Image (cartoon, rainbow, N blue to C red; front, top):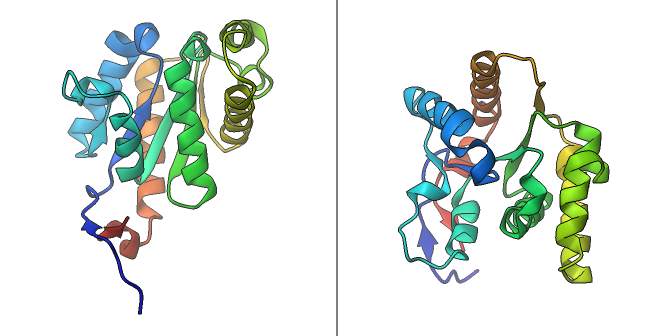
Length: 187
C-alpha cells in the first residue's frame, strides 16, 4: 500500500500559456484569450496571477495544467523567465505530465530550434549573462518543444484564422487526454 501526502484537484483541462509579454500581450494574446473564454477553455496567463506573489508560483500553475501553449515570438528568448517556464514545461512533457503545443508567432521553426536569426540573437545575448546549466536546459527545451507538431503564423497570415486553428488544435489535444487524467492528482 502506498501512502500519499495529499490529494489536489487540478482544474479541469487547465491550459497554461507561456509567452513573451511585451511583444504580443495586448494584441494577439488578448484575442486568443477571448476565443478561449468563448469556447469555455479554462486557461491561465500571468495577468491572472495575484500581484505580489513570487514568480515561482507560476511553476505551480504549469504543474496544475494539462496542456501548455508555448508561444514563440522573435523577442521570446529575451526573457529568462519564459525560458525557465519552457524548461519546466519540457520536463513535465518528458514525464508525460503535460501536453505542450508550440505556437510559432511570426518566427521560423528552425530559428527557434537552432537559436538562429533574430530569435537566436536574442537568445545568445541573454545566454551571455546566464549559467551553463541554464543554457543547456533552455537549448534542450527549445529543441524538444520545437520538434513537436505545432502551429505557425507567417507575417502575412490572418491572425483571426490562426486563432481558430489554435482553438481547434487545443480541442483535439484536450479530447485525447484520458478521463482518468482529468480527476484528482497526487503530489
